[in-house]
Amino acid sequence: MERQATARTVVVVEDEEPIAAAVAARLRSEGFAVEVAGDGPAALDLRRRVRPDLVVLDLLLPGLDGLEVCRRLRADPAGGDVPVLMLTARDDETDLLVGLGVGADDYLTKPFSPRELVARIRALLRRADRAPTVAPALVVGGVELDPAARRVRRDGAEVHLTATEFDLLHVLAARPDVVHTREELLRKVWGQTGGTSRAPSTPTSGRCGASSAPTSSAPSTAWATRRAPVVTWRPLDPLGSIKVKFGVVIVGAVAAAIGALVVTARLDVPLVVSAPAVAAVALGSCRSWRRA
Image 1: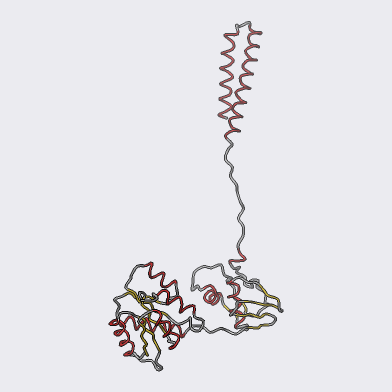
Image 2: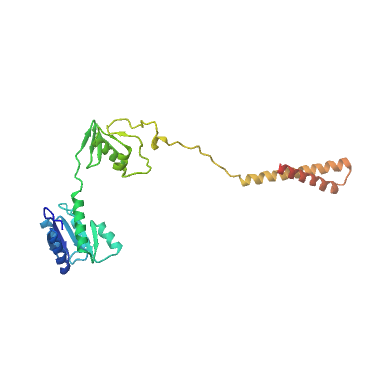
């Protein structure tokens, strides 16, 4: 097995002695320095004295349970960033989410393989070793960028940026003499590796103060958007249609009445005969007009 060049210290917090002894023996055989605590208060005291590189923490402990121990570890300003691997006999998803929510970095359910335990410990230590350090402030021209506080000042005045704008400016200011391609910006700022995006599609210079307008003849997505004409469709007003039909009926009735009176006066025909005949002619005319 691969051994550590410098022994890393692991604190094992487990109230079941057989499990604690087995875990400690396996970790020592892998080159780790191991300290064991059997309850919650002892674990916090051991953490202050030993300053371990990692804590293997059982969930069910006497005195203080694993969740409370993890909360107090995270609240400790002197070493709240220590990686915590939580062990538990519970496999319920809620318990897993609660454990991760209070600050555990990983979760292993009993019974577990000793090889898997060692592999997870090594992975957590590698992750802790790769933790980024606080970058120094960047000054380019009159622009000052503080990565730790995520603040930007220009000529002494603070400039308010969105998170994406700040990340983009940080990438450009870190290497001000480099021309960045679209793919580089997508990867470093937006975390994308392909596909379509609303990010600018033209190469962008890292020089602060340079024009942000596109220089390529092919327009980018941000500047190529055009509004399509809006066409509004309005359905026929039912009430208006009824009013038109009612008006046609009234006009037809009045015309039929006048026609019946004229026919009666000119031809000397009784009104009871002329009225139905004129009404029929008027109705036929209305139907012909409606079809037209």
